[in-house]
Amino acid sequence: MDMPAGNSEREITATRMLDAPRELVFRAFTELGHLEKWWGPDGFTTTTFAHDVRPGGVWRFVMHGPDGRDYHNKITFVEVVPLERLVYRHGGDKDVEPVSFEVTVTFEDVGGRTRLDWRMLFPSKSAKDHTVKTYGAEEGLRQTLGRMEAYVAALRRA
Image (tube, rainbow, N blue to C red; front, side, top):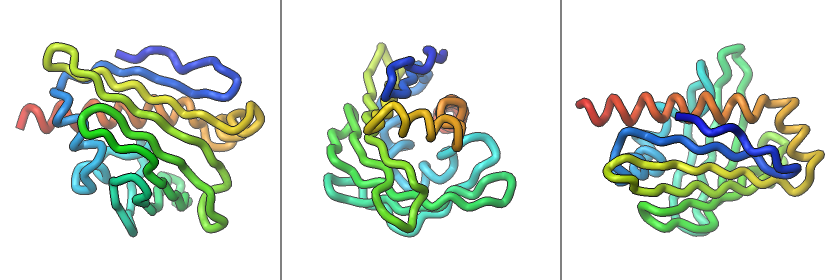
């Protein structure tokens, strides 16, 4: 179940109820063996060069688009509260896509299911608008959450 993306001037938000326990959803989000199997919009694949999920740790990766374009990314973790919350900064280096924002993802146990809340905060309205227009960020987030939902459902069935 999707909740609509946020309409704040500087934010993109989404909520999804996942039919999987919080522990599984958190592992799928933080363990590389899982993460690369669902991360990104439909048709994208991910190659990781560094992955360290702890405050100050970095995830460097390339998202390979279905059109053959590569998107270089860097995430720096600010806060890691196991099973509850991740806060990270996206971007900030010259060798990655020219977008910077902060993300907060929360994981809430709802009777054995997981409510996942995803909040992307941009430094300005124009930075958000640029990311939405250039990268399709709102639709990309919706598709990424759909891929995650399908992935954790498959894990749960296995």
